[in-house]
Image (cartoon, rainbow, N blue to C red; front, side, top):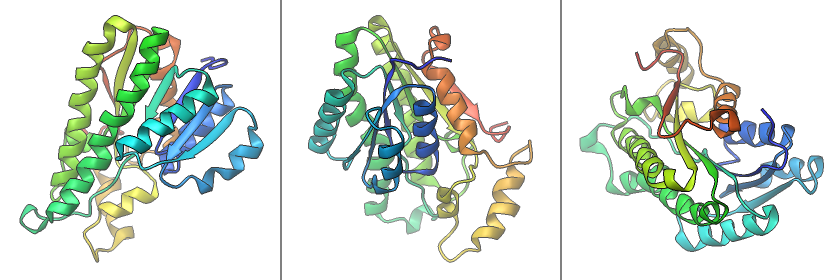
Length: 251
């Protein structure tokens, strides 16, 4: 898969999956704009890929900041041919009758509303070019929920529905929109799904890992490879799809 002359925006680029996805595009020759609230940890890529990479700090749940970030990315890239939304927030397992409205709203803002805001701005650029590929990272939890993840599951279900709605809406503009459902993944985010005060390592081994039929946690590289395919010209007829990269967790 060749990404020379491709221009990419990655949101949530400072996360476990986002960093790997960002680096993979750079290694494949793409020019990349990395967006996240905190992008300091991506400083090393400035020197390693000078002129090919830029990072932009923005609150992606704020409409004005998203608009400014996309303008900055467009000015650097020239256009935007690929968008990958890897931004996400976990929910500590909480019974619905104990969940605060503020936490519910925050999960919706980060996992769902941010998709609306970033896609809205990037699509304007893609429509002008007449081509594009968008990949939204959702979660297998939306298809096979775990107890206590009520807000998270809802937010990721919204991400999947939003992906399908955009796919049919944007097909006439040759803009493809797909989603990936990662299974339990070996990132720092996994620990945040544990109940507050719970034994994180025990839950990781005895709950999350054992829930995967293939017997391993998903690695960020696994997700990055799926993103590469869905973003590539080889997937030119793939849109509205939800690809489970979950080791069978959704079965």
